[in-house]
Length: 441
Image (cartoon, rainbow, N blue to C red; front, side, top):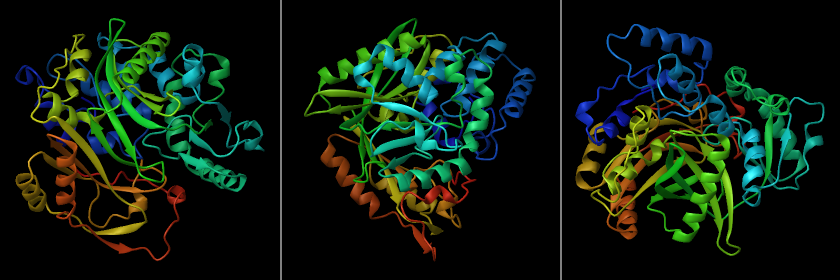
């Protein structure tokens, strides 16, 4: 398992027949997700060397990490005789512009207006044919990194400057992988150094997590995504979803259409949608070619098993047969504890304090994402408007109980900060180089 860390290894222990497996970490997690480590050629060479010299059989190669690891497993697996989806089908999901072009062919009513934008053109705005406001994103990004809501031309020009400075961080390794597969010339031209502009879509957001197995879709959970009032940063995830079952069914049918069209098979995914209640309109937001580690504890609490079971079983070419509502709790949530301005971390909750919280409040799990001495603006893969301090997972028998546990947990988590003399206003956080993940497990 590439990038295996302590938190996710604990989640693996809930798998059916866990004792039948032996898990080995390939590439330490701090390197697999590190901002300075995206030399794909070197990473592949390192992985091949470790696999070729491994004293045992290589029965599976898998991951839960997004870019760039999720694009490397379909390269490595065929070299070791292991089942895999095609690299082309993975790229059709991850290349934002190519994905929209292909989605439009099968579910056109669920796709917003979009256009390509070249930040390095003499006049990047010349290709924009969408009225303000609109979203602007790199062709490849992670965690809303370099994603902006653009409301006027002045903001567009400022963001273009930011894009030109930082887009290469993901664009160059993404282009290396793009060059390994066949694609139409009009798509190859729009490489990782381009952006996509999309009209605003909205409504109640959710994520369908599932897998394709022998051409058939299986949805093992639908998770509601609740945003803060800024309409960009997530506040929390709720599972199970409270959307109408008829809406979830329509989303499932769309997912089957799109992934079948992509040739995507025998692999997990999570796909994000919006549902506009007043118009009954469904919008497809994006497709991720992996399980969501944000959901792992939620599934364990409600269904009795982490979604890592999907990744592991599929990588062995088995049907995961995920359990349904076998967990200890009827519902679960993941909260994002955020800070909205730059600062230096002076204090974080101690391990003993976190252990006491988790002991005293059943169903609570706290994962701190910062460390003492860190400047928040040095964190990588944050959205453009806030910084994640901690993830708080909570299981309960109803949502009122979840909110009570959350408030009690917040009251006991002690973070302290030293202020920065010149703070960056919202939307400008990533103008300083972000070269560290700032993540501790």
